[in-house]
Amino acid sequence: MKITTLLPAMMFISCVTVLTSCDDMTVKTGDGSEKVEADVNVTSETREVSTFNKISMEGVFNIILIQGNRESIKVEAGKNIIPLVETTVENNKLTVKIKDNTSISKMKKINVYITFVDVAEVSSEGVGTLTCNKKLRFNDLKLDLKGIG
Image (tube, rainbow, N blue to C red; front, side):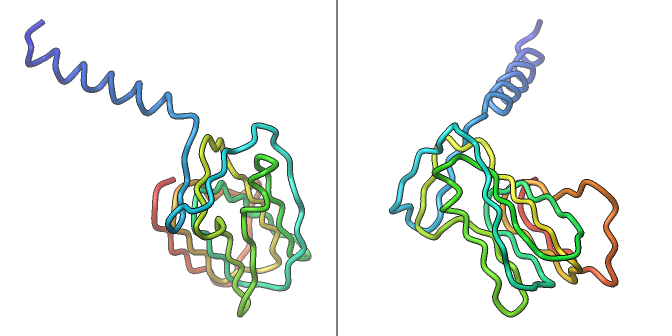
């Protein structure tokens, strides 16, 4: 093989190897003054929240949307990571984010199951996925998705 053919092939193999070997992540918010290593023991916590019709995600999450008859949140992650996931409702907007000034290392994933009655707006800034397990019905929906995932 000529070097001109070999070099791109080697670069491709190197990139694939690096990308597929990344099973741990480090997440930093703010200046990262609180450093936490993710617990490998995954657990979940269900949270009651007030009524919302907008959803905003900021960070590294796998969001699963579920349409139901009342609003609730279930966070699934390492046992010591769950308290660092903030879920707040203000002005009918649910915000899901990692606590400010926190650095999480060796994190596998954070799943957030959001049960809602009706949503008019979903915005996401960060890394992760936004999925649903079955068909959802909306009167009107605005999506604003920025990031990777």
